[in-house]
Length: 513
Figure: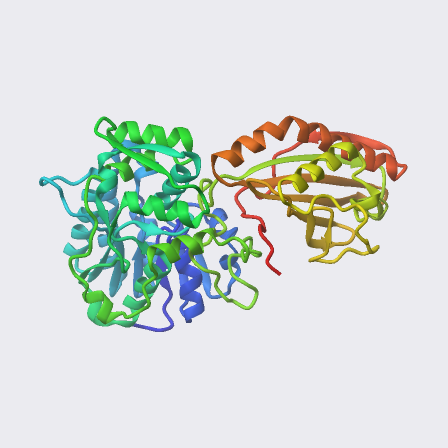
């Protein structure tokens, strides 16, 4: 393999592709990321790396696919067509695989690495989704370019569709009626280990043209996996009642009802539950040795939010990768679990510095500019529930710093005179963040945004948020108006409710400094 030739990654904007590319770059490879929208790919942080080249290509457009593959030695095939083509995904996957095999031969590729699906038919039947994944491997391997087929079971990590379905089921339903297939066996694998195998195949030429089962170190039922998730999320034990009447279609619509995962994704995944997914061939473990992450550890990593302080960058400035199990930029809307929020803005006839003098001193003896009695009541409730409550007599310096504590808040981020980000350390069924952001609009004009984000813990957290939402709307509007009055400046526009910024980006929950 030519070390200077870029590696083609099809499906670069997908869940696995978005994690594979920065991992390849960190390993020292040049990468050519292919997607139908270069503009969307360009928004990813790794797209700014000089070793990454973005190209527009579509597996259903053979000329664009061949052009993307030209000049490369190896291609990763990470494309599945369930969403774009609805119920005709099997036919679409078949066409796309044939196009890829032909383009690889025409472009002179030396290898293809394909991430497929692992399943064992029950009563001689496989779901259409899993059968299609296996057929794609056969089509690719029938071509003249050697294709490595890595057959994976359920992938554990934030952003994985199957993981997110599990997340919403467990967090939203204390009692679950599930299909009998919840007792099917699976050998889940952490996304970190999937990436390890994908990259490892590049360095082991003997894997060319071979088929390998890849899985984690444990075999268990989906029911047990749901129980482990509840334990790691700190939720009460879930009651799971398997029933015979839930068809895959009914299950998919139920999943869509309680979660944002599209039915087009949920249906083939629930159909796949009818099959066991257990490795029958473990040769890959000797060829590409790595520490396999257990189910509990993988789930814990996906839920570990205390260190996710830079998720918007996906990897740090020095190129250090964050755990693949965490949410990444560009993941699907449903990735990362339920996020609730409320945001308002106001345009004020004042400079940013003038408004910051009020915002930077908020809390403590200075109060919150509006409904101080309600804030004190919330502090009293927190004290009754075992929290520290609202200590308005706590000493306050004029200049807040990250890590400072006042009332029931901890300062997560402070950038005078533009932003103050507070994390709530009160007793709540979830993690809450309050964010003040100032943007200059001219010499004597600025915009003030006040946003609350909430990551609920279980169904109780969701009910808590919506119960307090009417009060939050009144309080936030009042705070913006009174901040303007306290600065002695005129309100030009607002307060008006706006869409929450970065709704997909996980904020900074529990601080353990």
